[in-house]
Structure formats: C-alpha cells, structure tokens
Amino acid sequence: MPLTDAQLEAFCLLLREERPSITAALDRQVAGFSEEDRDRLLVQLRGEGRGPVVIPPALEEHHHRAIERAFSDWAVSPPGEMDLERGAFLLASHAHPLEDMGRWEAELDRMAEALGVRLGEAASPGEIVEGTAEYLHGELRFDGDRENYYDPQNSYLNRVLDRRRGTPISLSAVYLLLGRRLGLPFRGVGMPGHFIVKYEAPGGPIFLDPFDGGRRLSVRECDAIVRGLGYHFDLRFLQETPPRRIVERMLNNLIGIFQRDGGEERIKRLMRYREIVQRG
Image (cartoon, rainbow, N blue to C red; front, side, top):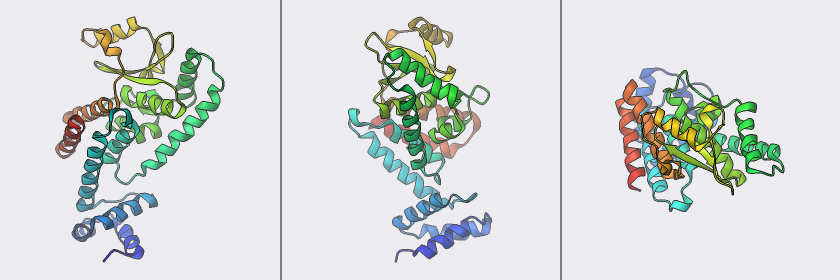
C-alpha cells in the first residue's frame, strides 16, 4: 500500500533528526518501500530544502541505481540528440541527491535571457564572443578555481553555477549550455590537459579560455598550452569534442580527484557511470 502524504512528511521530519539510531531504524523501513515510494520520498526531501538531512543507505542506493539507469538511457541517445546538459546534471545529482537540478536549469535559462539582452544586435562573431566573456567573467564573476583546483565541487555543474568557480571543462560547459539556448555556435575543445571553447565563425573559429577569464587564444597559443603540459600538439586537438566525450572527461577528472583523496565507493560508482557512457 503506498505511503500517504502524511507518512512521507513524518519520514522527512525524522530524517532531519541526524541521530544514528533513528537513521538505522528508518533505513530498515525504507528498504521495504516500493520503488515508487522511494522516488516520492526523494522528491519530498528535495522540495523541502530545510537544513541538513541524513540519507538512509537504502535510499541512497536507490538514488544511485536511478542515476545509473538514467546514464544508460542517455548514453544510447543518437549523436545529434545527445544532451550535454542532461549528462552534466546527472553527474551533479550523483553527488547531490537531494538537490533539485531543475533549479539550476532555470538559472541557465535566466542567464541566457540576460545574455541575449546584453548582446542585442551584436553584429560580428568577435562582439558576440567578447560580450559573452564580459557577461560571464566580468559581470557574474565566473572564474577558474586555481587555489582549490581539485575540489570536486568544481566539477559539478550545480556547484559551479552556485559558487561561480570551476575547472576548465565545467566553465566551458556553461558557455556551451548558454550558447545552445541562444543558438550561438560555441563548441567544446578537449585539448590534452586543458579544455577550451571555440566559436564557429564564418572567417574561422575563435578560441577562448573560460578558465582564464574568457581570454581569446590564437592557434599558436593553443599549441603553447598543450606543449607546456608536456604533449605534442596536433591541429586535430582543436576539433569539436562531442557531448559524450565531454561527460566522459568530467568523469575521468572526478575519478582522478577521488583517487588522490580517497573514497573507494564513490570511485566505483563513477567508474561504473564511465563504463556505461563509453559503451553507449
């Protein structure tokens, strides 16, 4: 028999007690819930947003199984229909199961609307690129997190939008998702060791570095970045990186971070997601 709304509310209140004995008892009960009731409980907890919650292991496991299924569905999307935003927010939800990612999708909508107004009738690709960089880095203060580069929060899109700090690839994703909303041809470029963005202009691509305030880059400067990281440069490195490879690279980054800092269970889950994405 499905749980009533009153029962769900009571469970939410108890989960906020943060007492091990209560959490253990609730975990045993949650383990016996139907899949539908576990989904309802997660939705209820996300919607409340009142203070910390201790998630029972059975509910956390349910959430991770749901993320795995969602990644499986995402990974078999046709190449032209694969949605980077969906993949990035699935990864964020893995680490933040009680956060409503719809809030951050709405934030991207708001940002895109504001950017569109600022760009106005910008005539040239150069003006569009400069206007976008000024909005993100000048007005909103997005920047690369050099002091805490390996903080995993820099790799989760919801936290990047909240803190306005990130890694090269997560900051690049912001450009790509705003560009998609406005019909602007920003593309991800996964060079070895460093991720940048290019704008596909009629006269040739314009490269820029979101980790460095949206600084414009020449091909020679891209070459210097790659060689400075110890790699041989090849012009093929400046080709567009598709959504599947962007999400795979995000996963690789997080796996590397947790391998440095510990967290075997999280590493196993991330490696499982990566396997799904790669074989899709």
